[in-house]
Length: 80
Image (cartoon, rainbow, N blue to C red):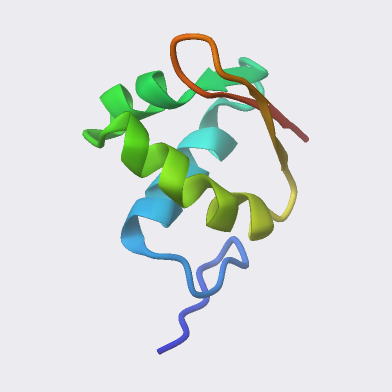
């Protein structure tokens, strides 16, 4: 089943949509996001965030998501 949200996302799971929404809501305030901190905010594990990020990155219209570093948690660079 394919769903299309107002933001133009398709075929994302609920977790992936939540991660993408979080990034879109915060990209104007910061550039670098650690998986573990996103996980804490969304009630997920850092592993769940990291596992779902490739799908989020592929469907992130309007923002660019790039794997940036691995110190104490994977860091993602997110820009508009």
